[in-house]
Image 1 (cartoon, one colour):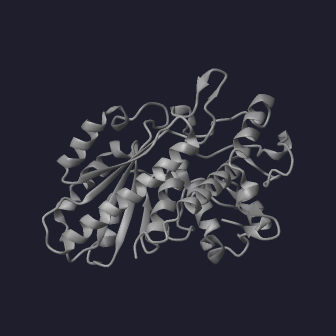
Image 2 (cartoon, helix red, strand yellow):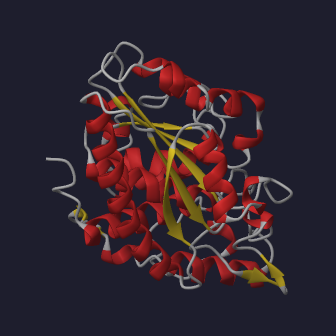
Image 3 (cartoon, helix red, strand yellow):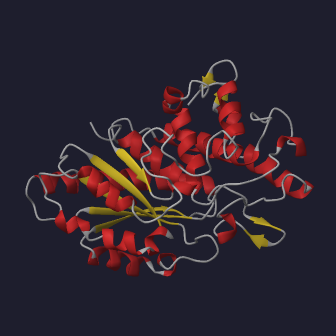
Length: 336
Protein backbone atom coordinates (compact mmCIF):
# COMPACT_ATOMS: atom_id res chain seq x y z
CA UNK A 1 0.00 0.00 0.00
CA UNK A 2 1.09 3.54 -0.71
CA UNK A 3 2.85 5.27 2.17
CA UNK A 4 3.07 2.15 4.34
CA UNK A 5 6.88 2.15 4.26
CA UNK A 6 7.08 5.88 4.88
CA UNK A 7 9.52 5.71 7.78
CA UNK A 8 10.30 9.28 8.79
CA UNK A 9 13.54 8.46 10.59
CA UNK A 10 14.86 6.47 7.64
CA UNK A 11 13.91 9.21 5.19
CA UNK A 12 15.74 11.83 7.26
CA UNK A 13 18.84 9.62 7.39
CA UNK A 14 18.79 9.10 3.64
CA UNK A 15 18.43 12.85 3.08
CA UNK A 16 21.43 13.46 5.37
CA UNK A 17 23.50 10.86 3.54
CA UNK A 18 22.53 12.28 0.14
CA UNK A 19 23.32 15.84 1.26
CA UNK A 20 26.73 14.73 2.54
CA UNK A 21 27.59 12.90 -0.68
CA UNK A 22 26.38 15.87 -2.70
CA UNK A 23 28.82 18.17 -0.92
CA UNK A 24 31.59 15.57 -1.14
CA UNK A 25 31.16 15.39 -4.92
CA UNK A 26 31.34 19.15 -5.23
CA UNK A 27 34.44 19.67 -3.09
CA UNK A 28 36.53 16.60 -2.26
CA UNK A 29 39.33 14.80 -4.08
CA UNK A 30 40.25 12.64 -1.04
CA UNK A 31 39.44 12.18 2.68
CA UNK A 32 35.87 11.32 1.65
CA UNK A 33 34.84 9.92 5.04
CA UNK A 34 36.29 12.89 6.93
CA UNK A 35 38.56 10.64 8.99
CA UNK A 36 40.68 13.71 9.70
CA UNK A 37 40.16 17.46 9.56
CA UNK A 38 40.00 18.78 6.02
CA UNK A 39 43.18 20.14 4.50
CA UNK A 40 43.77 22.11 1.31
CA UNK A 41 45.06 18.98 -0.46
CA UNK A 42 41.65 17.32 0.13
CA UNK A 43 39.89 19.91 -2.04
CA UNK A 44 39.54 19.65 -5.79
CA UNK A 45 41.67 22.14 -7.74
CA UNK A 46 38.64 23.32 -9.70
CA UNK A 47 35.26 23.63 -7.99
CA UNK A 48 32.36 23.35 -10.40
CA UNK A 49 28.72 22.49 -9.86
CA UNK A 50 25.49 23.67 -8.23
CA UNK A 51 24.58 23.30 -4.57
CA UNK A 52 21.52 25.50 -3.98
CA UNK A 53 18.83 23.29 -5.51
CA UNK A 54 20.33 19.99 -4.27
CA UNK A 55 18.87 19.84 -0.73
CA UNK A 56 15.38 20.23 -2.19
CA UNK A 57 16.03 17.48 -4.71
CA UNK A 58 17.21 15.17 -1.91
CA UNK A 59 14.13 15.98 0.16
CA UNK A 60 11.64 15.43 -2.66
CA UNK A 61 13.33 12.36 -4.14
CA UNK A 62 13.47 10.42 -0.88
CA UNK A 63 9.95 11.33 0.24
CA UNK A 64 8.51 10.39 -3.16
CA UNK A 65 10.39 7.10 -3.62
CA UNK A 66 9.64 6.00 -0.05
CA UNK A 67 5.94 6.76 -0.38
CA UNK A 68 5.57 5.03 -3.76
CA UNK A 69 8.47 2.86 -4.93
CA UNK A 70 6.95 2.66 -8.42
CA UNK A 71 6.74 6.40 -8.97
CA UNK A 72 8.87 7.91 -11.74
CA UNK A 73 10.64 11.15 -10.85
CA UNK A 74 11.49 13.78 -13.44
CA UNK A 75 13.91 16.44 -12.21
CA UNK A 76 13.76 19.71 -14.13
CA UNK A 77 16.77 21.40 -12.46
CA UNK A 78 19.26 18.91 -13.89
CA UNK A 79 22.11 21.19 -12.83
CA UNK A 80 21.48 19.72 -9.36
CA UNK A 81 22.95 16.48 -10.67
CA UNK A 82 25.18 15.65 -7.66
CA UNK A 83 22.00 15.26 -5.61
CA UNK A 84 20.41 12.88 -8.11
CA UNK A 85 23.67 10.95 -8.43
CA UNK A 86 24.01 10.70 -4.63
CA UNK A 87 20.58 9.06 -4.40
CA UNK A 88 21.18 6.72 -7.31
CA UNK A 89 24.46 5.71 -5.68
CA UNK A 90 22.90 5.09 -2.25
CA UNK A 91 20.10 3.00 -3.80
CA UNK A 92 22.56 0.93 -5.85
CA UNK A 93 21.16 2.02 -9.22
CA UNK A 94 24.39 3.69 -10.28
CA UNK A 95 26.37 0.50 -9.65
CA UNK A 96 24.01 -1.33 -12.01
CA UNK A 97 25.40 0.68 -14.94
CA UNK A 98 28.89 1.45 -13.58
CA UNK A 99 30.52 -1.46 -11.76
CA UNK A 100 33.04 0.84 -10.09
CA UNK A 101 30.28 2.75 -8.25
CA UNK A 102 30.12 0.14 -5.48
CA UNK A 103 28.24 1.03 -2.30
CA UNK A 104 31.38 1.02 -0.16
CA UNK A 105 34.34 3.27 0.63
CA UNK A 106 35.94 2.65 -2.77
CA UNK A 107 32.69 3.48 -4.54
CA UNK A 108 32.29 6.73 -2.60
CA UNK A 109 35.83 7.71 -3.58
CA UNK A 110 35.19 6.80 -7.21
CA UNK A 111 31.94 8.75 -7.52
CA UNK A 112 33.21 11.84 -5.70
CA UNK A 113 36.57 12.02 -7.46
CA UNK A 114 34.96 11.64 -10.87
CA UNK A 115 32.16 14.17 -10.45
CA UNK A 116 32.65 17.09 -12.84
CA UNK A 117 36.00 15.67 -13.90
CA UNK A 118 37.43 14.90 -17.37
CA UNK A 119 36.39 11.41 -18.39
CA UNK A 120 34.16 11.13 -15.31
CA UNK A 121 30.64 12.27 -14.49
CA UNK A 122 29.34 15.61 -15.83
CA UNK A 123 28.16 18.40 -13.55
CA UNK A 124 24.66 18.19 -15.07
CA UNK A 125 22.36 15.21 -15.50
CA UNK A 126 23.14 13.39 -18.72
CA UNK A 127 21.82 10.37 -20.66
CA UNK A 128 24.69 8.25 -19.27
CA UNK A 129 22.86 8.36 -15.91
CA UNK A 130 20.25 5.68 -15.10
CA UNK A 131 16.76 6.83 -16.17
CA UNK A 132 17.95 10.22 -17.51
CA UNK A 133 16.70 10.93 -21.04
CA UNK A 134 17.64 14.60 -21.52
CA UNK A 135 20.73 16.67 -20.81
CA UNK A 136 20.22 18.58 -17.59
CA UNK A 137 21.55 22.02 -18.49
CA UNK A 138 18.42 23.20 -20.27
CA UNK A 139 15.39 24.26 -18.27
CA UNK A 140 11.71 24.32 -19.09
CA UNK A 141 10.56 21.09 -20.68
CA UNK A 142 10.44 18.74 -17.69
CA UNK A 143 6.68 19.09 -17.23
CA UNK A 144 5.93 18.57 -20.92
CA UNK A 145 8.17 15.49 -20.88
CA UNK A 146 6.27 14.16 -17.86
CA UNK A 147 2.90 14.52 -19.56
CA UNK A 148 4.26 12.89 -22.70
CA UNK A 149 5.58 9.96 -20.66
CA UNK A 150 2.14 9.41 -19.10
CA UNK A 151 0.24 9.75 -22.37
CA UNK A 152 -1.53 6.44 -23.01
CA UNK A 153 0.06 4.88 -19.90
CA UNK A 154 -2.70 4.91 -17.24
CA UNK A 155 -0.60 2.79 -14.86
CA UNK A 156 2.13 5.46 -14.63
CA UNK A 157 2.53 8.11 -11.93
CA UNK A 158 5.19 10.72 -12.55
CA UNK A 159 6.35 13.39 -10.11
CA UNK A 160 7.94 16.35 -11.89
CA UNK A 161 10.19 18.66 -9.90
CA UNK A 162 10.26 22.16 -11.38
CA UNK A 163 12.72 24.80 -10.18
CA UNK A 164 11.27 28.25 -9.56
CA UNK A 165 13.82 29.75 -11.94
CA UNK A 166 12.72 27.17 -14.50
CA UNK A 167 9.13 28.21 -13.76
CA UNK A 168 9.88 31.54 -15.46
CA UNK A 169 10.50 29.91 -18.85
CA UNK A 170 7.84 30.06 -21.54
CA UNK A 171 8.00 26.29 -22.04
CA UNK A 172 7.31 25.49 -18.38
CA UNK A 173 4.43 27.96 -18.15
CA UNK A 174 2.89 26.76 -21.42
CA UNK A 175 3.16 23.17 -20.16
CA UNK A 176 0.98 24.08 -17.19
CA UNK A 177 -1.99 23.95 -19.57
CA UNK A 178 -1.42 20.30 -20.52
CA UNK A 179 -3.54 19.01 -17.63
CA UNK A 180 -6.59 20.22 -19.60
CA UNK A 181 -5.77 17.76 -22.37
CA UNK A 182 -5.44 14.70 -20.14
CA UNK A 183 -8.15 12.07 -19.79
CA UNK A 184 -8.87 10.84 -16.29
CA UNK A 185 -8.75 7.16 -17.29
CA UNK A 186 -6.66 6.75 -20.44
CA UNK A 187 -3.46 8.44 -19.24
CA UNK A 188 -1.22 8.32 -16.20
CA UNK A 189 -0.95 10.72 -13.27
CA UNK A 190 1.37 13.73 -13.35
CA UNK A 191 2.24 15.36 -10.04
CA UNK A 192 4.04 18.69 -10.60
CA UNK A 193 6.19 19.93 -7.70
CA UNK A 194 7.33 23.55 -7.77
CA UNK A 195 10.57 23.87 -5.79
CA UNK A 196 10.11 27.36 -4.45
CA UNK A 197 13.50 28.24 -2.94
CA UNK A 198 13.29 31.89 -3.89
CA UNK A 199 16.42 32.44 -5.98
CA UNK A 200 17.99 31.65 -9.31
CA UNK A 201 21.64 32.06 -10.29
CA UNK A 202 21.95 35.77 -9.54
CA UNK A 203 18.63 37.17 -8.32
CA UNK A 204 15.31 36.37 -6.65
CA UNK A 205 12.74 34.42 -8.65
CA UNK A 206 9.41 35.92 -9.61
CA UNK A 207 7.48 33.08 -7.96
CA UNK A 208 9.66 33.46 -4.87
CA UNK A 209 8.46 37.04 -4.49
CA UNK A 210 4.81 35.99 -4.45
CA UNK A 211 2.84 35.45 -1.24
CA UNK A 212 1.34 32.02 -0.47
CA UNK A 213 -2.04 33.37 -1.55
CA UNK A 214 -0.69 34.71 -4.85
CA UNK A 215 1.12 31.50 -5.76
CA UNK A 216 -1.92 29.42 -4.73
CA UNK A 217 -4.23 31.49 -6.93
CA UNK A 218 -1.80 31.22 -9.84
CA UNK A 219 -1.72 27.42 -9.53
CA UNK A 220 -5.52 27.28 -9.15
CA UNK A 221 -5.84 29.43 -12.26
CA UNK A 222 -4.04 26.76 -14.26
CA UNK A 223 -6.58 24.22 -13.02
CA UNK A 224 -4.62 22.50 -10.22
CA UNK A 225 -5.20 21.93 -6.51
CA UNK A 226 -2.23 23.50 -4.64
CA UNK A 227 -0.70 21.55 -1.72
CA UNK A 228 2.10 23.03 0.39
CA UNK A 229 5.28 21.42 1.75
CA UNK A 230 7.44 23.72 3.88
CA UNK A 231 11.09 23.45 4.90
CA UNK A 232 11.80 26.98 6.02
CA UNK A 233 12.54 26.79 9.76
CA UNK A 234 15.73 28.60 10.86
CA UNK A 235 16.99 25.26 12.20
CA UNK A 236 17.72 23.16 9.10
CA UNK A 237 17.14 19.81 10.82
CA UNK A 238 13.80 20.98 12.20
CA UNK A 239 12.88 22.31 8.76
CA UNK A 240 13.47 18.90 7.20
CA UNK A 241 11.66 17.17 10.06
CA UNK A 242 8.52 19.22 9.46
CA UNK A 243 8.85 18.95 5.67
CA UNK A 244 8.90 15.14 5.70
CA UNK A 245 5.59 15.20 7.61
CA UNK A 246 4.19 17.79 5.20
CA UNK A 247 5.23 15.64 2.25
CA UNK A 248 3.41 12.61 3.61
CA UNK A 249 0.22 14.64 4.08
CA UNK A 250 0.54 16.20 0.63
CA UNK A 251 1.07 12.82 -1.05
CA UNK A 252 -1.88 11.31 0.82
CA UNK A 253 -4.05 14.11 -0.54
CA UNK A 254 -2.54 13.97 -4.03
CA UNK A 255 -3.11 10.23 -4.44
CA UNK A 256 -6.63 10.58 -3.06
CA UNK A 257 -7.35 13.16 -5.77
CA UNK A 258 -5.84 10.89 -8.43
CA UNK A 259 -8.12 8.03 -7.32
CA UNK A 260 -11.18 10.26 -7.42
CA UNK A 261 -10.32 11.45 -10.93
CA UNK A 262 -9.87 7.85 -12.09
CA UNK A 263 -13.35 7.11 -10.77
CA UNK A 264 -14.81 9.85 -12.92
CA UNK A 265 -15.07 12.68 -10.40
CA UNK A 266 -14.49 16.19 -11.72
CA UNK A 267 -11.55 17.40 -9.64
CA UNK A 268 -8.51 19.54 -10.31
CA UNK A 269 -5.30 17.46 -10.21
CA UNK A 270 -2.81 18.07 -7.39
CA UNK A 271 0.19 20.40 -7.55
CA UNK A 272 2.73 20.51 -4.73
CA UNK A 273 4.45 23.78 -3.82
CA UNK A 274 7.62 22.87 -1.92
CA UNK A 275 9.05 25.88 -0.10
CA UNK A 276 12.65 25.57 1.10
CA UNK A 277 15.56 27.87 1.74
CA UNK A 278 18.05 28.02 -1.09
CA UNK A 279 20.94 25.80 -0.05
CA UNK A 280 19.08 24.39 2.95
CA UNK A 281 21.48 22.66 5.42
CA UNK A 282 24.44 24.56 3.93
CA UNK A 283 26.47 27.46 5.40
CA UNK A 284 24.33 30.33 6.64
CA UNK A 285 26.79 33.15 6.03
CA UNK A 286 30.39 34.02 5.22
CA UNK A 287 32.12 37.30 6.06
CA UNK A 288 28.79 38.84 6.95
CA UNK A 289 27.18 37.90 3.64
CA UNK A 290 24.13 35.64 3.66
CA UNK A 291 24.53 32.33 1.79
CA UNK A 292 21.69 30.03 2.81
CA UNK A 293 18.39 31.45 1.59
CA UNK A 294 20.19 33.63 -0.95
CA UNK A 295 21.42 33.45 -4.54
CA UNK A 296 24.97 32.98 -3.23
CA UNK A 297 24.05 29.36 -2.44
CA UNK A 298 23.20 28.64 -6.09
CA UNK A 299 26.55 27.28 -7.26
CA UNK A 300 29.66 26.71 -5.10
CA UNK A 301 29.09 28.62 -1.84
CA UNK A 302 32.73 28.33 -0.65
CA UNK A 303 34.59 28.96 -3.87
CA UNK A 304 37.97 29.56 -2.16
CA UNK A 305 37.96 26.49 0.09
CA UNK A 306 41.10 25.26 -1.71
CA UNK A 307 43.18 28.25 -0.59
CA UNK A 308 41.34 30.10 2.18
CA UNK A 309 41.69 28.74 5.71
CA UNK A 310 38.44 30.28 6.92
CA UNK A 311 36.39 28.81 4.08
CA UNK A 312 38.04 25.43 4.58
CA UNK A 313 36.99 25.44 8.24
CA UNK A 314 33.43 26.39 7.29
CA UNK A 315 33.37 23.46 4.84
CA UNK A 316 34.72 21.11 7.50
CA UNK A 317 31.98 22.16 9.95
CA UNK A 318 29.34 21.96 7.22
CA UNK A 319 30.22 18.40 6.25
CA UNK A 320 30.49 17.24 9.87
CA UNK A 321 26.96 18.53 10.51
CA UNK A 322 25.58 15.58 8.50
CA UNK A 323 27.17 13.05 10.90
CA UNK A 324 27.92 10.72 8.02
CA UNK A 325 29.82 8.40 10.38
CA UNK A 326 26.41 7.46 11.85
CA UNK A 327 25.12 6.54 8.38
CA UNK A 328 28.08 4.69 6.87
CA UNK A 329 30.40 2.06 8.32
CA UNK A 330 33.70 1.19 6.57
CA UNK A 331 33.11 -2.51 7.11
CA UNK A 332 29.30 -2.75 6.74
CA UNK A 333 28.60 0.08 4.29
CA UNK A 334 25.43 2.15 4.62
CA UNK A 335 23.52 1.70 7.89
CA UNK A 336 20.39 3.64 6.92
